[in-house]
Amino acid sequence: MSSVKENIVWHTHEVDKAYRAQLKNQRPAVLWFTGLSGAGKSTIAGALESRLAQLGYHTYLLDGDNVRHGLCGDLGFSEQDRRENIRRIGELAKLMADAGLIVLTAFISPHREERQQVRDLFPSDEFLEVYVNTQLSVCEQRDPKGLYKKARAGEISHFTGIDSVYEAPLAAEIDLPAGEASVTALVEQCLDHLHERGIIHLSKS
Image 1 (cartoon, rainbow, N blue to C red):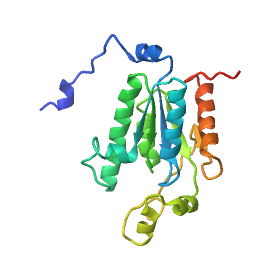
Image 2: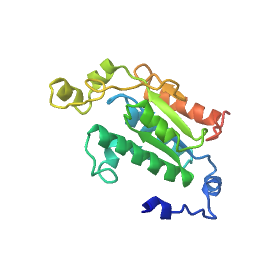
Image 3: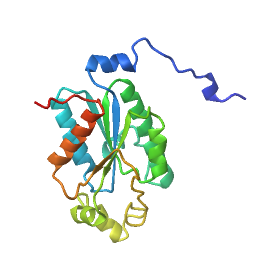
């Protein structure tokens, strides 16, 4: 018996990624923000998206909590479900990049293997891993959702950084010292990197 995928063919359309990107005057890219809970991923990604929008670039921000209201609403927080969550987001980000967008994602995505699987979906110059490098002690002190407190009290199990591992990137394209610099400075660091890669164009006058 043949598998379902054997009967599925990817359709190539006349309006392709390059054409969509040309219309937007930008290069498509995926910025994959990773880091511990409370590291500042969503805050920095949101601030960066706002700056990109002000500069006239076309973006979309995929946030961990938001996608669980719809696309991944059927998933729990088991190891298997968390991996499936990342797989789905990777595929969605790929479609958005195909639309010519600059895609920002904010997910803990604790395992290097998972992040590599997402990276492998893209051309080498299109995927940027952004490590929001914040010490556990700082994240725990912030604890914006009260999750660390619950994890320490045993109310949440398999919580990343407490009783579940977080594997920090070994060679992220962008390493943000989020516990030491302001959000504004970190956003400027990201913009400079995107400019150097030719994804966006900044006026230096």
